[in-house]
Length: 93
Image 1 (cartoon, rainbow, N blue to C red):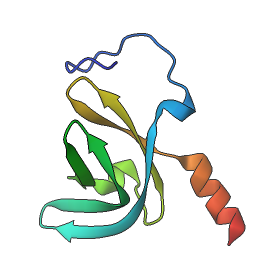
Image 2 (image 1 turned 45 degrees about the vertical axis):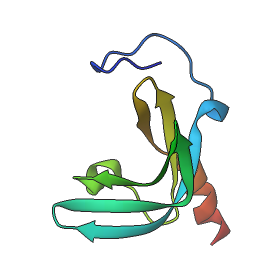
Image 3 (image 1 turned 135 degrees about the vertical axis):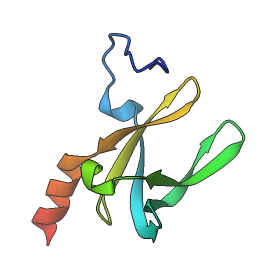
């Protein structure tokens, strides 16, 4: 589990422990971008259908990317984009 103060406990997170969704749509929303998922993520009793980025360029999220999330004590933590999946998608084209 990640602690909310930014410190991480030392543990190894395997790839199959991540919650993965695909970026189906990216919408420009004023001061940032909202990424809509291809399927909702169910956390506690709510469905999360998207993620908001103030600076999407810093995270390099593109349409069709597989986004990885980890479930933490207070909800979801964005771990980043699955670059290996992006590379495989580029080889197919």
